[in-house]
Image (cartoon, rainbow over all chains, first blue to last red; front, side):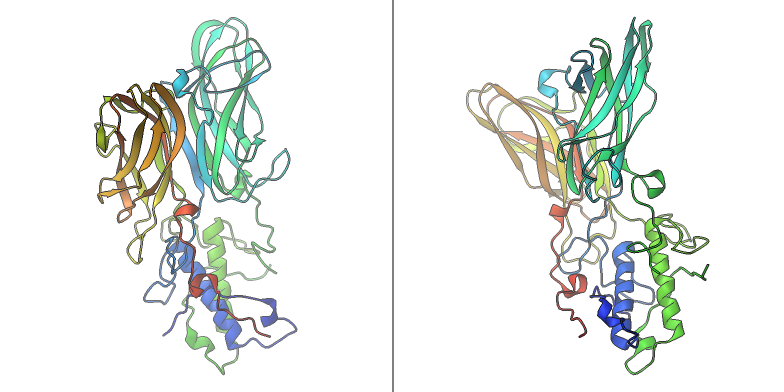
Length: 236
Length: 229
């Protein structure tokens, strides 16, 4: 019994103009299907006693490509803080890490590796995008303030959508922000360089970043285009 | 709505050997398998299907094997002191920057070396703060060591002038994956000068395209495939 695993050309000429389905076309179809199975799942194709295509193996002889999905970056400081921000002034964006010990301050907050296509050319960005979940820590200082949050993709020179949270108008209360979600984080294939930026609508409060998670979610969450049942995700 | 089946069936050459006409059983097997692939990859019902048979990535009897990913782990201590080596003098062979070994673990495809001529490697972006208080320009060296396999990554070297501090992201490549599965790693640092401090606050480890050799085989890229006239 032979179970072929082979990525070959599946061209229209094989089936157009009502040509008979022949052994060559079927050989290519079945070989490709079996190869897809092995590439994707890294298991021998059904009926095969060995594995020809090594899914995700990265070798030069048998193919395999990275599949980047899910978490792209995460950091959490528990009760402590990752980065210290002091607002540069009302209505001005600043790096989330601009008030820490100078030598430890980062112009690039973090890197994330992704295999997605490149985000659209202009805002509001649509698919594909990444999502970012954030938490912050602050101390109240009398006047209520609105803190805006965005993520700058330095590699693409594009900025995410903006989310906000409020520092209430009390004094001396240390509290955590609610969960903040950015749903239009621009991404591209390869390493992406990100800077987290904050802005206050009133003077220069201090805000600590305590948690960051950047991820690719499923299409149901809006990160990617859902299948419409036509090419390339489906067929007639 | 048409009848859509999805799942895995053996696709054997015997059902389309030369001289045989295309048969119903082969066509349905192909549809069955391709729809199964669609569902395993996307986690959604196949096009035109009312229900989903194969649950992608669920690791259960419904199939759905794990699909391994790019970001495999690391750490980020933000502004807090992370991995450090202080007041060192001439550490010719890089030493661990943490007293815990392994200082971090990552999960790698456990099948990654079982059938292959050569395993891939990982790549890391590392944020370092390097202070050279010695009298001469000196080198700081970094290595990620796979504790389980004993493999050292390539060495990344940063030259820091006398009396200065450099803060930057560096790249460490050639990080070994051993036999896959859970792998323990230690971050090592070295210094060729007379008085230096090392502080590392972030390390992001990923499988990247730069660690993937380009395919040269017809099996993958079909470079020798011919198009029917």
